[in-house]
Image (cartoon, rainbow over the protein chains, first blue to last red):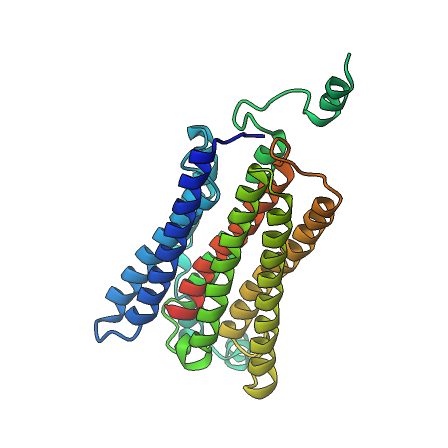
Length: 115
Length: 202
């Protein structure tokens, strides 16, 4: 039950609207980026950076992590770190479906080979 | 002991969390959100693993309506703003402001769900996409459906908070319930920002 002074509240109100403006602008930039005539990898990297920035803005200012205790920020960062590890853990599986489909032996042929 | 002191005993929590001194409930919500983030992380990582290196994977923008989902993204961002305004209002003791902004947030959530229903209807019945047709359909419908369930839960949750607000449950000194609900709603917005980028734009 935090009690805020009127000055603090006015400052917070301005900050909320600034964050809203940034989120709207970054979304517009994302939409512009996908139509840019640059390599798909560069578009992907820009989109990841833009999305991470927007997510950080929401977490820091709307979910108040910027003013919460640091330990709570560590708790909030834990799933982000685990998700990055998860992506690395899945690296050997990337494209596995495609490989399986490309090199798959038809079941009938496989069954005949056993006889 | 005065009446006020007796009332306070019922209102205040018995002990404080060292991480979130205002309430244990807030810490509880953060821990729930972390677990929920892992669910979404797992789904998004699975999506990436299936998509990578699959030459038959369609370009999302060729199937999905980017303009419509950009509008849905904007709606959720707007509803996040109305949610922080609702919390700011009750922190100043403005109960009618709380009700107004909570109502607008719920309206934003309902409009988002209506647009998602429209999008799914178009994809399934007009364009023949389905959860069983291919990996694109499976991952798309599971991810956006799981998020849609969160928005629906959020609308129900915020409606309950609004009902409590109408009964006068919150004040400038007692607004944990609003702050905790706001955390959930912003999380739903945050996840949509990621889903919009990874599923619709990339």
